[in-house]
Image 1 (spheres, rainbow, N blue to C red):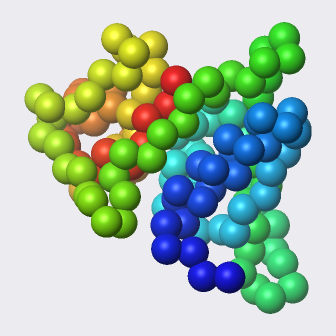
Image 2 (cartoon, helix red, strand yellow):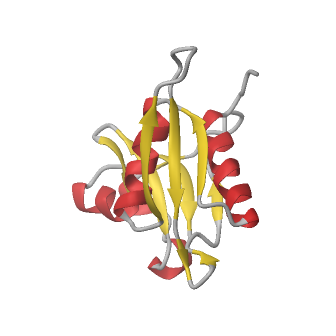
Length: 132
């Protein structure tokens, strides 16, 4: 099946798996997805992920979701920049999610990073998603 927005698809899979209380969720592998998962893991929103090879050679990312006392750690996961409407922001305009309690994931020329890392590196870029 062809997906127009692979990152949006992964975020929806995570959201749906957490609503069902699943411990893991799998998604087709890509470098962008892995970079976003690296940021989510560094910020403490997921336990981790691992890449597994599939029979067709595509590869698959198996994401271990994180819960605290039975409730998902990720309360809100929103896609900001979409294929139909890209959202780019300068360093000074980077959004603060819930007064700094959440994280924006930014794709910058220096790689995919959180909003705090982008501010400290003084780079702007495409706002991929927000997490709270």
